[in-house]
Amino acid sequence: MTDPSCLGHRQRLRERFLHSGFGGFNDYEVVELVLTLAVPRSDVKQPAKALIARFGNLRGILDAPLEELQEVKGIGSVTPVALQVIRAAATLYLQQSAEDTEMLLEPDKISAFWRLRIGALSDEVFEVAYLDSSYRLLRDGVERLAEGTLDRATVYPRQVVEAALKRKAAALVLAHNHPNGHVQPSEQDKTLTRALVLAAETIHLNIVDHLIVSPDDVFSFRKAGLL
Image (tube, rainbow, N blue to C red):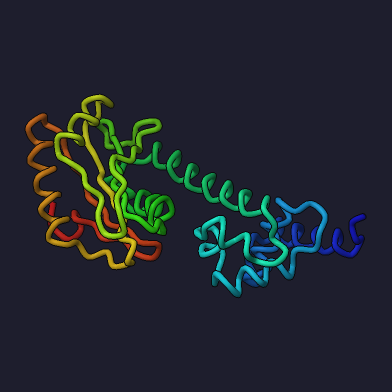
């Protein structure tokens, strides 16, 4: 049976959120409110505090692997899956929002999308966003072309060009992550970008930007004058 005081506490959290969003919430209270969506009856204050103690904040919790979440007392096996669903939904929201945005006008939106999507991955991946002639993201227009190791994901210019032709894209945004958290491009990153630009030019395809992301930061080749 659910403790009536627990139900009352949950209701008060929801009312506070409906009134002012997360304004005035402690970090653990944000997590607590999220956990109420996955845990219908139990008190989730202590698990929320334990998650904050271990992972630092909500982003750290949503980025954490399932196995590590399951190690936290009171979390169980279902809640970690629910947290990953919430994270995936947030990523999808950002992607679909970007489909209505001209990339050259709001570059921060696509940067935020990729920080959330791949910034916290433990291995390096290389992804492409396919844009139309108005520089808007095509529907379902993001594709992962390569997955690698801690410090490298191999992608080939021909692979990128063929994928763009298949999607009938007019322009591209390239992105990959640096699992070590340092987003400055390596010489290999610069060489690959130059090769991709040259390959794209042969079919009149424009590379709008190449982003290197971590959870906290992003490097833009365009902003740095390297494109």
